[in-house]
Image 1 (cartoon, rainbow, N blue to C red):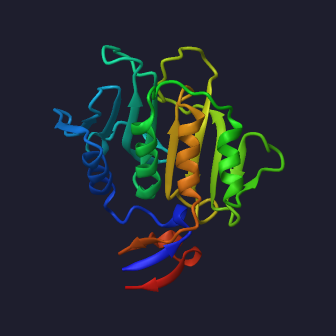
Image 2 (cartoon, one colour; image 1 turned 60 degrees about the vertical axis):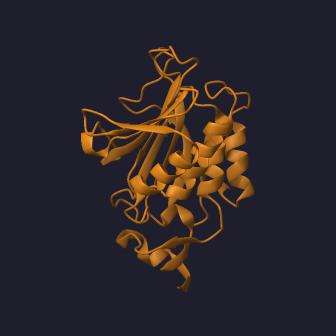
Length: 228
């Protein structure tokens, strides 16, 4: 077992489904297997959902298949979710788990009260650097291997707001410039900024994380603090 940092390059240890499934079970969310070979989790109030979609291969972000889709509804009878968030395999499961806890504890998961700056403030507090050209929308880790940015939404990102040209938070890790991404995440336009900030703050946390294996593309950029 390795204890490594930075978290955003640590990968998911090949256990993203199991770790997040354990988190959701601990929160009391119910799970059903679907006919599409996915695993659907729903919160007790039926306002929040999470689906392990990797087997269904719904679409890709940055050339990587989406593995988890999170969503929230205004009420349990709503057909269309207020917002969705998507994560590929390889995302550090600690950051996704912290996001789910934040979603679970919100009284109204579909409503946000903070401005976009709350996301960048959370990253700045962890020592991340605001982009010189886009200081109000983009921040990068000190090693320039991971970015969080308010961007035009990629194709297939679903949101209850039907207006075109919407922007939403995007995050990605690129350990080697011009090489394949390690992971990607996309938040639709209506995701509350406070929830994105919870993910970003956890992603940028300096606390070491345990891993049995580390991504090959990040080996030269990870610091192994100790083995156990």
